[in-house]
Image 1 (tube, rainbow, N blue to C red):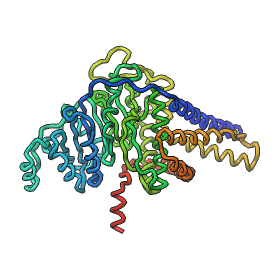
Image 2: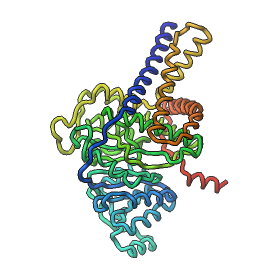
Image 3: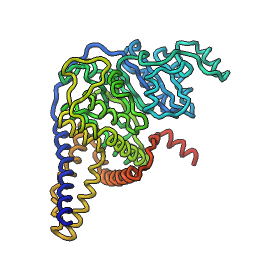
Image 4: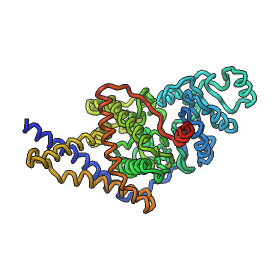
Length: 464
């Protein structure tokens, strides 16, 4: 038994060292200088999808941002997908589309969730669900006042937009030049590969309220490290940078090739990251495409969000990870065959990186095991011989990542003082990881929960 426990202690140390080695490689790669991307020629036609449920308070800010986008209006169409809202989301959307012939509203009668709502838009819909601003505003108003179903528009499908699908959440505020930067990798691939195998691109999701509270700051520092260190390095190394849930773009043919958004998953973006890699497509990260949003400001809001993310990674690992190692050759399901060499089987480095990605917060569990071995060694010296230098590496590298991320994000000097909040929230993260694993082991149903919004907090205060 003692030999088995000693071997387990060394295995735990090896796992922590592996996570640390990955961090070191990504940190060094992200900080290395890189020549600017070559200029792109031409812009693709795009379809912007805005899935929303009970977002009446958030939509006006997004609409203002859409109006300021520097993109030819004749090459873009906006579709707002009202996923069975019970507030004034539909009314806010109708006010936006009325004077904009390039925008329309689709109202789903019942809530189906973000992933399925997006799938619904990409398949033909009954005309009664689609509202086009080209129709007479008076006619639309008359039908609504009479309580009659709308007969405006025709069946909706992919042809309404273009080959590139862009997704924005209601609480996002894309910068005017962000859309051009987001779609650039579809036009010209700086990795010197054919543009055809770029399936999806994520832009930068930047937390705008990082100074508002300790929880918002920690969400901001997590976001900076994940995007400006991890995703930036993975893009440079061609190791499938993760897709994000908003300010992201998909090639429609690639999305169709993997079966669209998997219904019921909590992290449809992370699920698609693995799905594309399994079929030989590539994902990219475009840091110059910046969209701002607000992070949860309360500890409760932060905890709920991260619990959902943890459970979401369990879904991703359970649904995709085994296929990553059992499929020796990527099997593309593209509607039209591409040129030879456009696809390849996942390399060993890519398989390893995607495994790290799918495991999500699993290193927290290894950390707890290592801490237990260390405590026992302190109480009874030599019991396991757990190497203490592991801790210097394991905690030292994240500290360097955070400092580098704040520098790359060009945050003001005063924000560095807020790093004192990190130990508390890291401990909270460990507790959330444990709780999420308990829920998964006990087979608690996966349940989506709305992210904390400033408008939600204001409503709660009014009720009190």
